[in-house]
Amino acid sequence: MRQGRDFIARHGETVFNAARRLQGEHPHTPLTRTGFAQADEMGQALRDLLGPRPALTLWASDTGRALQTLAVIAEHLELDWHAARRDVRLTEIGMGSWGGRYYADLMASDLPVVADGGLLHPAPDGERYPEIAARVSAWLADTDDDPGDRLVIMHGISSRVLRGVMTGQDAHPQFETPVAPGLPQGSVVMIAQGAETVVHRGTGHAPA
Image (tube, rainbow, N blue to C red; front, side):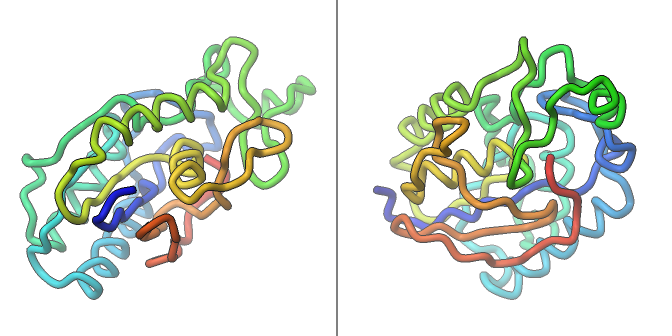
């Protein structure tokens, strides 16, 4: 078990979120003005907790929305965004042929999209929850010796699986994977020694 604290944040609102489109692993869905405001709130909350220039290792999914969110937070913390590490294993659930489509269009075709608790049903050709758990667990294993605290900017579904793995949640009865409770966009949690605390609760969309 890691000795440092992990601050795990969900990126701010994007143009896809505002339009109610599934974005999944889509790499370039920029933040809206609301999304930038949510990133500001996360940055201020972390600044209030950690002070300026905290000793944090910065991590992010390699998507534009995660990196934009990190840029704003890093400015609040007076940290170097360019020092951040990126990893594709932190990206969002792969939505296959559903990616980019409107929630309403899929639902109008009687396709199951949103599951209980704000989770997303996998697309027929999309990524399954055990696959998400495998990749985030591999990232955890590869970075277990990161020194001290770290900040990780990622996504709605993938962060719930990562948090579930890190806090030892029971496997979800439908998706057979540890899944933590959902939080809105713009939220930050702290995980220390397997226990999770909400640092800032955002006001954005749920689900992803």
